[in-house]
Length: 84
Image (cartoon, rainbow, N blue to C red):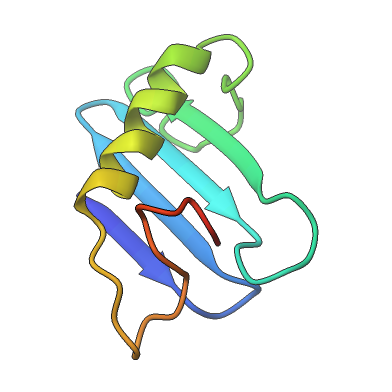
């Protein structure tokens, strides 16, 4: 499941089973932040484990990039180009 939100600088969330990936700041000039949570062990999303599980974070991000369809109403950029 994937969510995109244009407000607050652009937020993306990808959920796969117990894993949830969040990227914040797509519309800003800085590198977007990356957060990964295991909802089975951390349902309140208190402990970002993106650095501990980089392969899982990358897999979820790649899922978004491969399935995203660029539309004028949702201007995050093309999933194929990797631009945000």
